Image 1 (spheres, rainbow, N blue to C red):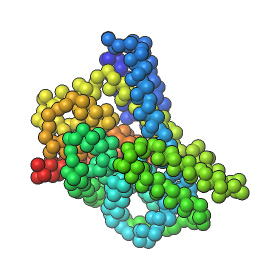
Image 2: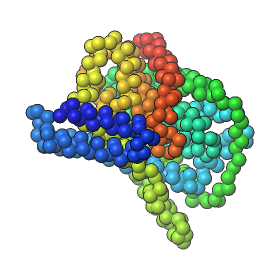
Image 3: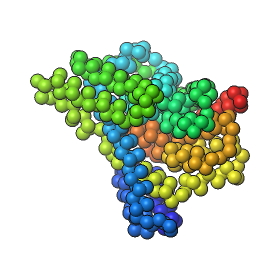
Image 4: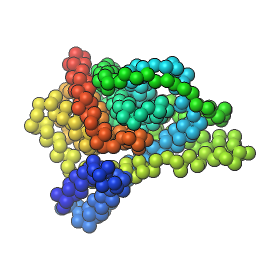
Amino acid sequence: MQTLLLALAGLAFLMIVLEDVIHINKAKTTLFLGTLAWLLLFLFPPAGTDSHWIQEKLDENILEIASLWLFLMAAMTFVAFLNHQGLIETLIYKVLPKQLSERKLMFLVAGFAFFFSSLSDNITATLISIALVLSLKLDAKKTVRFAVLVVFAVNSGGVALITGDVTTLMIFMQDKVAIDDLLWLSLPALASVMLLAGMLSLSLKGEVTISPSPRRDDKVGMMIALIFLLTIISTIVLNVIASIPPLLTFLFGLSIMFLVGRICYKDDKRENLLDYIRVIEFDTLLFFLGILLLVGMLKEIGVLDSLVHIYEVLPTTGANFVMGLLSSLVDNVPLTAALLKSDIGMDAASWLTLTYAVGVGGSLLVIGSAAGIVAMSKVEAITFISFMRYSGIILIAYSVGFAGSYLVGHTLH
């Protein structure tokens, strides 16, 4: 049965890769195979378990997935409204010059995505950064280049803060790293992002003209943009001071948005802010559901735990580097959880390199991180293969960042 379940996970991965060939949406295939895997677990429980045990594990997985689903729904609804109002474009036009080179734009996008993801969660940072890229109306190939950079920059930006990346928070909560040590990680992380921006910009020689498009003069839109900003800030602050889940804060912010819309648009039948929930990418949410069901299944049958044996074969630094590569295939949260539970003996410097690896390594493949999946849902030109064409230079940037994290760790300790 374990072999069959592994085969289903492999088939799901293959069908994602071949989406352009088989012309079946990845959300449909992953949802089918993810639910089938759990049905088989119930019908043929592993030795020593029963349906009650499997039900408990399914409940745990569904809770994690539901939290992500609802958070994504809230963030996407905010962004859908702001895009409709043209507020994101307006902000870009105020900050950027009317004309600049594509190379300079590449570095500006890299810096924006990196620092914004340090202030907010990866999903929100990706949504905003991709909205910025799409508003520039570049051709498909250039848009993919910028989106690849956004994914890497967003994953790198949050790695040095406990509020920026879940795996960083998990490692910190186990007292493996200190906050001041983590902050030093931002140096190699930023350096690797700028290196990738440089490599991606080598073939860019054009100029970009920023031409504002007409926007509705809507004070309510500005008010909701402020609510969105306050929601992001409140999410970070409340999580730090009271451990309030980001989901709860975002849903509260969304409810305020709906109430403000109801009060301010009561005489305008054209605007109903609840309608914006209908325009978000539900295929992305279904893809998340299928992928996380599959990853949850792999965790429950012990596949993720077996990955820890890599540390018995490779030196600690090499194993940490490989863990980063594996995080592009397996969700980094259960992977990190398996490592923490195994109680591997590593010094503070090694835990610092692992923090970088599992936080950034998922950028190598488009399905390896939430940022990648969100980008794929927003940019039509991004497929598994089109993103993978850049995996080589992403690997170079990741390797440089990893080496930098190693130097930082061993300098501090």
